[in-house]
Length: 267
Image 1 (cartoon, helix red, strand yellow):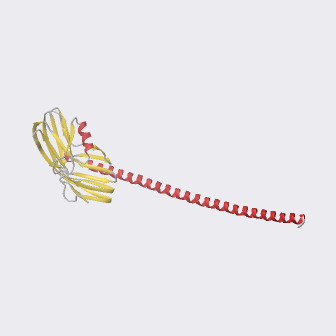
Image 2 (tube, one colour):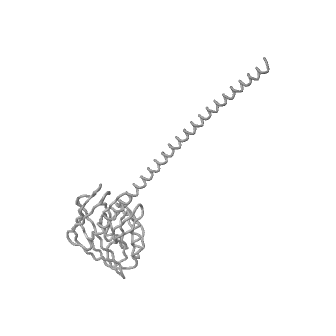
Image 3 (cartoon, one colour):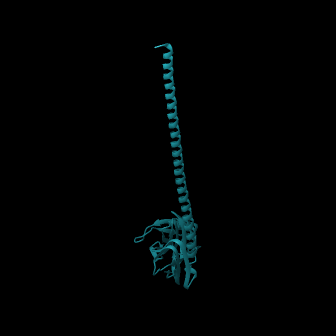
Protein backbone atom coordinates (compact mmCIF):
# COMPACT_ATOMS: atom_id res chain seq x y z
CA UNK A 1 0.00 0.00 0.00
CA UNK A 2 1.28 3.48 -0.93
CA UNK A 3 1.88 6.25 1.61
CA UNK A 4 -0.96 8.28 0.05
CA UNK A 5 -3.36 5.39 0.39
CA UNK A 6 -2.35 4.97 4.06
CA UNK A 7 -2.97 8.64 4.77
CA UNK A 8 -6.42 8.43 3.14
CA UNK A 9 -7.27 5.36 5.22
CA UNK A 10 -6.08 7.09 8.37
CA UNK A 11 -8.08 10.17 7.45
CA UNK A 12 -11.12 7.99 6.93
CA UNK A 13 -10.69 6.39 10.34
CA UNK A 14 -10.22 9.83 11.91
CA UNK A 15 -13.42 10.98 10.23
CA UNK A 16 -15.27 7.97 11.53
CA UNK A 17 -13.91 8.74 15.01
CA UNK A 18 -15.03 12.36 14.74
CA UNK A 19 -18.46 11.23 13.58
CA UNK A 20 -18.68 8.85 16.56
CA UNK A 21 -17.68 11.62 18.95
CA UNK A 22 -20.30 13.92 17.43
CA UNK A 23 -22.92 11.19 17.72
CA UNK A 24 -21.85 10.53 21.30
CA UNK A 25 -21.97 14.25 22.01
CA UNK A 26 -25.45 14.40 20.52
CA UNK A 27 -26.55 11.48 22.70
CA UNK A 28 -24.98 13.15 25.75
CA UNK A 29 -26.85 16.33 24.87
CA UNK A 30 -30.10 14.40 24.64
CA UNK A 31 -29.34 12.80 28.02
CA UNK A 32 -28.61 16.17 29.60
CA UNK A 33 -31.82 17.58 28.14
CA UNK A 34 -33.77 14.62 29.55
CA UNK A 35 -32.18 15.05 32.96
CA UNK A 36 -33.02 18.75 32.92
CA UNK A 37 -36.60 17.98 31.90
CA UNK A 38 -36.91 15.36 34.63
CA UNK A 39 -35.45 17.76 37.19
CA UNK A 40 -37.93 20.42 36.13
CA UNK A 41 -40.87 17.99 36.48
CA UNK A 42 -39.69 16.87 39.93
CA UNK A 43 -39.27 20.49 41.01
CA UNK A 44 -42.77 21.42 39.88
CA UNK A 45 -44.25 18.36 41.60
CA UNK A 46 -42.39 19.17 44.82
CA UNK A 47 -43.55 22.78 44.69
CA UNK A 48 -47.15 21.67 44.18
CA UNK A 49 -46.89 19.24 47.09
CA UNK A 50 -45.47 21.91 49.40
CA UNK A 51 -48.16 24.36 48.30
CA UNK A 52 -50.90 21.78 48.90
CA UNK A 53 -49.58 20.96 52.37
CA UNK A 54 -49.23 24.64 53.24
CA UNK A 55 -52.76 25.42 52.08
CA UNK A 56 -54.09 22.45 54.06
CA UNK A 57 -52.29 23.61 57.19
CA UNK A 58 -53.51 27.16 56.66
CA UNK A 59 -57.09 25.99 56.16
CA UNK A 60 -56.92 23.83 59.29
CA UNK A 61 -55.45 26.72 61.25
CA UNK A 62 -58.16 29.11 60.10
CA UNK A 63 -60.81 26.51 60.92
CA UNK A 64 -59.43 26.08 64.44
CA UNK A 65 -59.42 29.84 65.02
CA UNK A 66 -62.99 30.18 63.75
CA UNK A 67 -64.20 27.32 65.95
CA UNK A 68 -62.37 28.76 68.95
CA UNK A 69 -63.90 32.19 68.41
CA UNK A 70 -67.37 30.69 68.04
CA UNK A 71 -66.95 28.67 71.25
CA UNK A 72 -65.76 31.78 73.10
CA UNK A 73 -68.76 33.77 71.86
CA UNK A 74 -71.14 31.00 72.94
CA UNK A 75 -69.48 30.86 76.36
CA UNK A 76 -69.88 34.63 76.76
CA UNK A 77 -73.59 34.49 75.93
CA UNK A 78 -74.26 31.56 78.24
CA UNK A 79 -72.28 33.16 81.08
CA UNK A 80 -74.40 36.30 80.79
CA UNK A 81 -77.59 34.23 80.86
CA UNK A 82 -76.48 32.23 83.91
CA UNK A 83 -75.35 35.36 85.74
CA UNK A 84 -78.88 36.73 85.31
CA UNK A 85 -80.19 33.88 87.48
CA UNK A 86 -80.15 35.51 90.90
CA UNK A 87 -82.28 33.46 93.29
CA UNK A 88 -81.00 35.51 96.22
CA UNK A 89 -82.71 38.58 94.75
CA UNK A 90 -85.84 37.00 93.28
CA UNK A 91 -89.07 35.50 94.56
CA UNK A 92 -91.61 33.58 92.52
CA UNK A 93 -91.46 32.71 88.82
CA UNK A 94 -88.84 34.15 86.48
CA UNK A 95 -87.69 33.13 83.00
CA UNK A 96 -84.27 33.62 81.45
CA UNK A 97 -83.60 32.99 77.76
CA UNK A 98 -80.46 31.13 76.79
CA UNK A 99 -79.00 30.45 73.32
CA UNK A 100 -75.80 29.03 71.87
CA UNK A 101 -74.55 27.99 68.45
CA UNK A 102 -72.90 24.71 69.40
CA UNK A 103 -72.34 23.01 72.74
CA UNK A 104 -74.12 21.28 75.61
CA UNK A 105 -75.79 22.43 78.82
CA UNK A 106 -76.26 19.89 81.60
CA UNK A 107 -77.44 19.80 85.20
CA UNK A 108 -74.86 18.01 87.36
CA UNK A 109 -75.06 17.01 91.03
CA UNK A 110 -73.08 19.12 93.51
CA UNK A 111 -73.30 19.39 97.30
CA UNK A 112 -72.54 22.39 99.51
CA UNK A 113 -71.91 21.87 103.23
CA UNK A 114 -71.48 24.16 106.21
CA UNK A 115 -69.36 22.78 109.05
CA UNK A 116 -68.26 23.78 112.53
CA UNK A 117 -65.93 22.15 115.05
CA UNK A 118 -68.41 19.36 115.70
CA UNK A 119 -69.04 18.42 112.07
CA UNK A 120 -71.61 19.13 109.38
CA UNK A 121 -74.12 21.79 110.38
CA UNK A 122 -76.02 21.88 107.08
CA UNK A 123 -75.80 19.98 103.80
CA UNK A 124 -77.68 20.85 100.62
CA UNK A 125 -77.65 19.46 97.11
CA UNK A 126 -77.10 22.69 95.20
CA UNK A 127 -76.50 21.19 91.74
CA UNK A 128 -74.67 22.96 88.92
CA UNK A 129 -75.55 24.15 85.44
CA UNK A 130 -72.58 23.29 83.23
CA UNK A 131 -72.10 24.53 79.66
CA UNK A 132 -69.31 23.12 77.49
CA UNK A 133 -68.25 24.14 73.96
CA UNK A 134 -64.92 23.04 72.54
CA UNK A 135 -62.48 23.65 75.43
CA UNK A 136 -64.67 26.37 76.97
CA UNK A 137 -66.61 25.74 80.16
CA UNK A 138 -69.11 27.85 82.10
CA UNK A 139 -70.57 26.66 85.41
CA UNK A 140 -73.30 28.10 87.61
CA UNK A 141 -73.00 26.76 91.15
CA UNK A 142 -74.30 28.11 94.46
CA UNK A 143 -74.72 31.59 93.01
CA UNK A 144 -71.24 31.76 91.49
CA UNK A 145 -70.43 31.62 87.77
CA UNK A 146 -67.09 30.04 86.91
CA UNK A 147 -65.63 30.53 83.45
CA UNK A 148 -62.56 29.00 81.91
CA UNK A 149 -60.75 27.20 79.11
CA UNK A 150 -58.90 23.96 79.67
CA UNK A 151 -57.89 23.65 83.32
CA UNK A 152 -57.93 27.40 84.05
CA UNK A 153 -61.02 29.06 85.51
CA UNK A 154 -62.19 32.04 87.55
CA UNK A 155 -65.39 33.28 89.13
CA UNK A 156 -66.83 36.01 86.95
CA UNK A 157 -69.84 36.23 89.29
CA UNK A 158 -69.39 35.68 93.04
CA UNK A 159 -71.86 33.91 95.36
CA UNK A 160 -74.04 35.80 97.87
CA UNK A 161 -71.76 35.29 100.87
CA UNK A 162 -71.04 38.10 103.31
CA UNK A 163 -68.44 38.23 106.07
CA UNK A 164 -67.76 40.91 108.63
CA UNK A 165 -66.54 41.33 112.19
CA UNK A 166 -67.92 38.33 114.02
CA UNK A 167 -70.46 37.58 111.26
CA UNK A 168 -70.91 35.00 108.52
CA UNK A 169 -73.94 35.15 106.24
CA UNK A 170 -74.11 32.36 103.67
CA UNK A 171 -76.65 32.80 100.90
CA UNK A 172 -77.01 29.44 99.17
CA UNK A 173 -78.91 29.24 95.87
CA UNK A 174 -79.90 25.64 95.14
CA UNK A 175 -81.21 24.74 91.69
CA UNK A 176 -83.49 21.86 92.74
CA UNK A 177 -83.76 21.06 89.02
CA UNK A 178 -86.53 18.97 87.49
CA UNK A 179 -87.40 17.86 83.97
CA UNK A 180 -84.76 18.07 81.23
CA UNK A 181 -81.26 17.49 82.57
CA UNK A 182 -79.34 18.09 79.35
CA UNK A 183 -79.74 20.07 76.12
CA UNK A 184 -77.21 20.30 73.34
CA UNK A 185 -76.43 20.42 69.65
CA UNK A 186 -76.35 23.29 67.20
CA UNK A 187 -78.43 26.49 67.26
CA UNK A 188 -79.94 25.66 70.63
CA UNK A 189 -82.42 27.93 72.39
CA UNK A 190 -83.81 27.22 75.85
CA UNK A 191 -85.63 28.93 78.68
CA UNK A 192 -84.45 28.67 82.27
CA UNK A 193 -87.55 28.87 84.46
CA UNK A 194 -87.16 29.42 88.21
CA UNK A 195 -89.77 29.56 90.98
CA UNK A 196 -87.81 30.80 93.97
CA UNK A 197 -88.57 30.65 97.67
CA UNK A 198 -86.33 31.36 100.67
CA UNK A 199 -85.56 29.77 104.03
CA UNK A 200 -83.47 31.51 106.70
CA UNK A 201 -81.71 29.67 109.51
CA UNK A 202 -79.75 31.00 112.48
CA UNK A 203 -76.69 28.88 113.21
CA UNK A 204 -75.46 30.53 116.39
CA UNK A 205 -71.85 31.24 117.31
CA UNK A 206 -69.00 29.05 116.14
CA UNK A 207 -65.97 28.66 113.92
CA UNK A 208 -67.35 27.85 110.51
CA UNK A 209 -66.12 26.24 107.34
CA UNK A 210 -67.91 26.19 103.98
CA UNK A 211 -67.32 23.23 101.65
CA UNK A 212 -68.26 23.54 97.96
CA UNK A 213 -68.11 20.44 95.78
CA UNK A 214 -66.82 21.62 92.41
CA UNK A 215 -65.08 20.58 89.19
CA UNK A 216 -63.40 24.00 89.04
CA UNK A 217 -61.59 24.20 92.40
CA UNK A 218 -59.09 26.85 91.33
CA UNK A 219 -61.81 29.44 90.77
CA UNK A 220 -63.38 28.87 94.19
CA UNK A 221 -60.05 28.78 95.99
CA UNK A 222 -59.07 32.15 94.52
CA UNK A 223 -62.43 33.62 95.56
CA UNK A 224 -62.22 32.36 99.15
CA UNK A 225 -58.64 33.58 99.54
CA UNK A 226 -59.85 37.04 98.49
CA UNK A 227 -62.47 36.74 101.26
CA UNK A 228 -59.69 36.21 103.83
CA UNK A 229 -60.45 32.51 104.30
CA UNK A 230 -57.91 29.71 104.40
CA UNK A 231 -58.60 26.94 101.89
CA UNK A 232 -58.08 23.21 101.60
CA UNK A 233 -59.61 20.34 99.65
CA UNK A 234 -61.58 17.40 100.94
CA UNK A 235 -63.51 14.59 99.29
CA UNK A 236 -66.76 13.68 101.04
CA UNK A 237 -68.30 10.24 100.75
CA UNK A 238 -70.74 9.96 97.86
CA UNK A 239 -69.52 13.06 96.00
CA UNK A 240 -68.31 12.99 92.40
CA UNK A 241 -65.77 15.77 92.96
CA UNK A 242 -63.58 17.09 95.75
CA UNK A 243 -64.81 20.07 97.75
CA UNK A 244 -62.99 23.33 98.31
CA UNK A 245 -63.19 23.95 102.05
CA UNK A 246 -62.98 27.58 103.19
CA UNK A 247 -62.26 28.19 106.88
CA UNK A 248 -63.27 31.65 108.10
CA UNK A 249 -61.05 32.91 110.92
CA UNK A 250 -62.33 33.41 114.45
CA UNK A 251 -65.65 32.77 116.10
CA UNK A 252 -68.65 34.16 114.25
CA UNK A 253 -72.40 34.31 114.43
CA UNK A 254 -73.59 32.29 111.47
CA UNK A 255 -76.68 32.59 109.29
CA UNK A 256 -77.70 30.39 106.37
CA UNK A 257 -80.27 31.49 103.81
CA UNK A 258 -81.26 28.82 101.28
CA UNK A 259 -82.68 30.19 98.02
CA UNK A 260 -84.60 27.29 96.44
CA UNK A 261 -84.85 28.08 92.71
CA UNK A 262 -86.80 24.99 91.57
CA UNK A 263 -85.23 25.21 88.11
CA UNK A 264 -86.77 23.87 84.92
CA UNK A 265 -84.94 23.89 81.57
CA UNK A 266 -87.54 24.38 78.83
CA UNK A 267 -86.71 23.76 75.16
